[in-house]
Image (cartoon, rainbow over all chains, first blue to last red; front, side):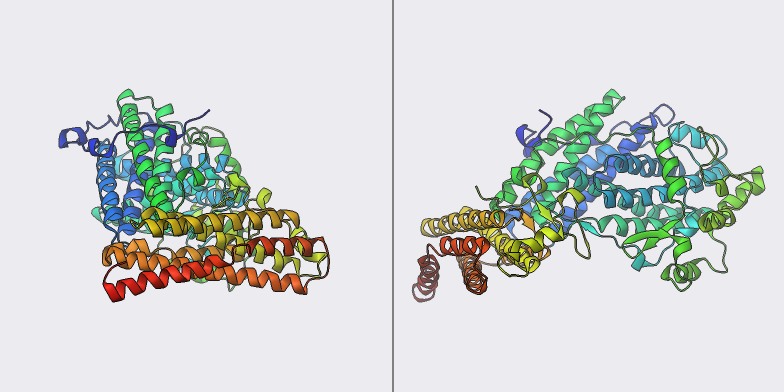
Length: 418
Length: 210
C-alpha cells in the first residue's frame, strides 16, 4: 500500500507556526548544491505561491467566518512555508543564475511530467510548452555568458540538461486566440493528470511573475528586452496550462486539491533529496500539508457533503522526480519543433494559411524591430564567434538549428518550413 | 450503492465536447450512446445525455442535503435534510441501474450532465455568504435550495414518465417505466418539504422564531 495523506496524522495547525529564526533558513551553497535540489526548491516555491494565491481568491468569494478563518490560518502557514523554501536561495546567486534554474525546472519538470502523463492531449500540451522553455534556457544561457562571463551555465545546470535551440522564441509569439486549450473533465480525469496540470501551471505562473518583476531591474537594454520578451511567453504558457483545469471544480475542491498536490510533491521530493538538511524541510512541510489536507477535507465535507476520500485517490501516484530527459527532449524537438498553436490544437506552421492570426500577431510584435531573443544570439556570435551551447548527446536533432554561427531566426524559418 | 460524486476511480465516463478532453479509455462511443434508445424508438444520444443529466442533478441534490444536515442546528431540519439525502441517493441508485440496464455506463457524465451539475451546485453555495446573514436566514435559504432541487427532481421524473409513454414497447421502455415507478415511490416527500418550509417561514415572520 502506498502513501495516503488521509490516513496519516500531520502536525496540528496551531503547532505549525514558526519564528523568524526558523524561517530565515541558511541558504544552500550555490557552488555545491545539486542542480536538482535547486530545481526542487524553485518548484516548491511556485507550488506554495499558487496555493496561497488561490486561497486568497477563495477568501474573496466568501464571508463565511469559519471558512475565511480556516483559510487565513492555513494561508499564513503556507506563507511561512514559502519563506522557508525560497530563502534557501542564496543572496550571491545572481538573478540570471536563478533564471537558469527556473528554466531548468521548466525543461526537466515539463519533460518529466510529459513522460508520465496518461492523457494524450495533455501530453501534447506539455510537449508543446517543453520546447519553448527549452529555447528560453538557451537564450538566457547566451545572455549570462555575455553579462557574467563563461562558465556560469555549467555551474548551474550541471551536465544534466542540454542547452541548445528549441522552438525559437521569436516564433513562439502567438495570437491570444491560439493559446487557449481544452480542459480535462473532473468526472474522468486521471488523478495524476490533475496533479500534473496543477504542478506545471504553478511553475509557469511563478516564472511569469519572476520575469515580470526582475526584468526591469537590469540596466542593459539587451537583458531588459530578453526578460520582457520571455515574460510575455510565460504569460502565454500560464494561459496555455490554466486552460487544462476543469472549471467545474468548486472552491472547496480546489483548496483540497492544492494541499493534496503539495503533499504529493513534498513526498516526491523527499524521496530524492540528496541534501539531508533540505530533506528535513520537505519532510516537515509534508507533515504540515497532511494537516492542511485534513482541514480542507473537513471544509469540503461540511459545506458540500463530499468526503475527501470520494475525490482523492486511495494513495499518492508514483512520485514526480527530477531526472535527465535529454533523449526525450531531443525526440520531441525532432518531431515537433515546427508546430504552433491553432485554436485549441497544434499544427505545423507551414500548414497555416497566409492570413492566419499567427502571422498577424508575429507581424505586430516582431516586424521591423530587433527581437531580443535573436539579438542575444547575434551579440554572442559577434563577441565569441559562435553561440553558447551545452550538448552532450551529439549534434542538434534539427538540422536547420545545427549551425552555431547562423542567426537562429533564419535557420528556424528553414526548419519550420521543412 | 449510489455514487454521489463521479470520478475516474468510480467508473466515470464521458464524451468530449468543444472544450473538454476525455481520456480515450473513458470515452463512451457515440454508437453505444445511440444504441441506448434504439429499441424504444428514441434518439439514443439525447436519451443517454438526459438520463446522465438527471442522475447528476440527483447527485448534487444528495450532496447538498448532506451538507445542509451537517450545518443546521435545528433537529427537525436536520431530519428533513437527512431524509432528502437518503431519497436523492436512492434516486441516484435507481437511475444508475436504469442506465446500466439500457447499456450505458452508470457513471456516464454527459456534456449536459456537466452543465446540470454546475447549475445545481451553484444553487447550493449559500453557505459561502453565511457571514452576511443570521443563522435563521441561512436555514431559510437552505430550505429554498432543498425545495428547488426537489421540485426539479420531481419535474425530471414526470419527464421520464412522458418519455416512457411515448416510447415503443421494448425492454428499454419497461426498464424506464420501472425506474419511474421507483422514483415516484415517495410522492408525498415533496409536499412535506413544502409544508416544512412554509411552517418554518411562517413561524419566523409571525412569531420571530422557528
